[in-house]
Image 1 (cartoon, rainbow, N blue to C red):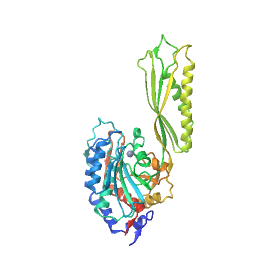
Image 2 (cartoon, rainbow, N blue to C red):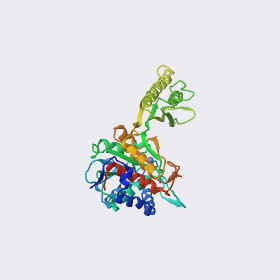
Image 3 (cartoon, rainbow, N blue to C red):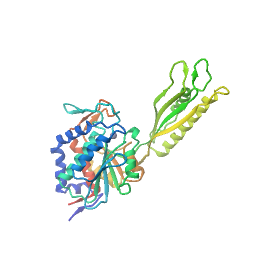
Image 4 (cartoon, rainbow, N blue to C red):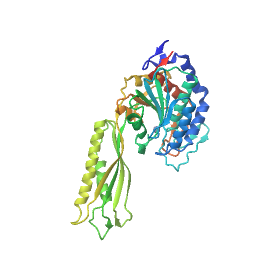
Length: 405
Ligand SMILES: [Zn+2]
């Protein structure tokens, strides 16, 4: 028996007749894969509201003959496709959640080649890929050496703060057994996200006594304090390299034009491609916030109540990278080229951030097809050419777990 050992070449994987059939599977079943995507995306999945979609995946995974199918304590749906041994174990995932609230209309509308629905591409096409990959492996009986853990994760988008993968890698029953990770997220063929974009997100609350704009003039003003902090942050000399960004995305506070507000809040997003730059920006922002409140408090009259500052960390995503010369990235580059596409290594914030920060090889790949307006109600997905993305995905996964020829 000849084995293509894990981490070897994609070309060798392709020499298996089972694999050759599985690659054709994606072409002959293109319409069925799209129908499946429509079914998945019609099930609402808002942040912290992924249960119904997870239940659907539990049913699908069981139907496909995966073992140990379960929804874990965080809400991820898992199912194992066992090879001749458990190791190496690769997680193949896509995220169940969307950025849209529960009252969104998730119905999918088809117009010519395009499917319209919130979340249809992000991550509807990744979720469809998850099922298509499992189907191809099952129906063509590809004999694999290691094992594949299929996972629909919760909490990939903003507020979820990677809670699904965080649980999977730190508390879940597979936590210490995962050797590599791939996430299918969004469309496309060339992108190989091997670098994790780190971020920190805050909700800042400032509270004070509040009063009349004329009669109580001189009281410390929470909106003014937040204004002073924004002014400081806006002056931060963010380096271009490593790319570092900040954004005040939301401010709220006050009740009336002639009242000194008793509260104000803002939400702030800090990002950097470099971990130490992110820490520097983070320290600057915390300092700016404290100084701004102190300054506003410094204006108060004797006996006035002080402003109180509350700094809530609402998001934290680690940065890092899977090296370009690691077997996983090399396999992805080789598979992309074999399909006639020029690969592009990329940095982004995805489920892969978490395993990357733990030193576990991880990448995020597009699942084929095209899309636009993701994270908006006008989001669309065009499945034409999707088979190439699925072929690439399959080759990378098989390259990592190994195939028995
Ligand atoms: Zn996504």
